[in-house]
Image (tube, rainbow, N blue to C red; front, top):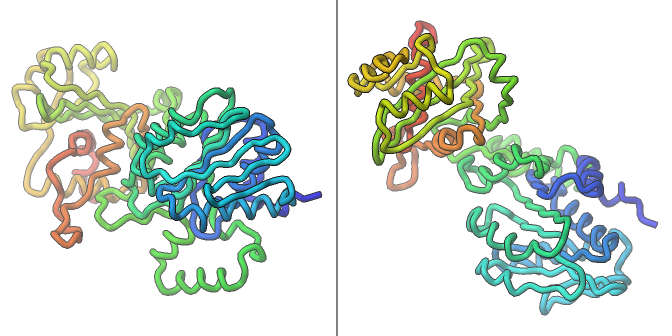
Amino acid sequence: MVRLTDCIAPPFYDLHYDIAEGKHSYYDLVGGRGSCKSSDISIEIVLGIVQDVNANAVIYRKVGETIGDSVYEQIIWAIDKLGLNDEFHCTTSPYRCTYKPTGQRIIFKGLDKAKKSKSIKVSKGYIKFLWFEEFDEFNGAEEIRTVQQSVLRGGDKFVIFRSMNPPKSKTNWANKQIEEDRLRPDAYVSETTYLQIPPEWLGQQFLDDAEWLKKMNKRAYEHEYLGVPVGLGSEVFDNVETLAMTDDMINSWEWIYRGIDWGWYPDPFHFGQMYYDSRKHDLYIFDEYRVNKMSNEKTAEHLKKTRFLTKHDRITADSAEPKSIADYRAFGLNCHPAQKGADSVRYGIKWLQSLNHIYIDPMRCPKTWEEFSQYEYILTPDGEPTGELPDENNHSIDCCRYSMEKVWRKRGQ
């Protein structure tokens, strides 16, 4: 008999029951060194094979040469930890573990070409478990989708694991994917650190090394041991976070700020709505409307019909187009020009940076989330931030500056 509490670390107890009850399909395990995320996934996969006669598993690393010293050894560890050495036959050419009583398989693959996944077949059951280890090493969301579309077939329940130490850059595609998954009803995001793991599981040397790095280089410690995307130093906004905003939440806000950045093509017309909590210094961006090649009359009519705007709802727009502002006023909308002047861009950006949080709902405002999260200072040829702001891919940012200028232009702000 094996006690699962000797195999699964305490921070993963809830995740274990969640998998057992089939509550989610996607399980994102992120954290720093020593957080036991890979150990937990290996235990869950081996248990799942033993408990479901139709289940098989495929485990991916981006580079096939890394399989032997990483995920393969991790599965071997899990088999041994669960006392199942006599029940599995494991080989290294190819890397594979077979459950002897039924012939179910755990298959290991390198993903040098995503299309090769089409050749994976199992003779019994279907591929229920899929694990992408070091998720950020893969070539992006499209590559992951290609694999999933090829592998996840023929079953009624799938469990997809994605594990990684988060990359430093918040704009990295993998970090963005995890943020998006927080909003998915079929996804479970687990964040753990070594501080949640029983110390005897890690050993004194591990703990001493972590404490030493904490003293010598706190930023490196936060990234390597706590799994914090500390950034590369080039991000303009390090206070941006995703937040799913409900209709009830939005309807409870009494004062809404609105703005417009005019555009036609290739620059878009961008309208946004937001709420500012002055007590907490938090900005909530919950609405966007972005189009190309649409007349002022049509955009105005769209906003009146879909956002129910009236002459009482103030909109602050880019003053570079006085005719567009006049058009909107003629169409019955309360549109006013933004105040421009020396350093207005810099001061507006500085105020946005000073906020405790800029919350963006990426489902309601995908373009706004994309621009805020990816906006970076111009770099030198050596890759160092210059402090200069690029004048591109910033339409929602300009819209927010215009919307909030009544606040940030006040003395003391």
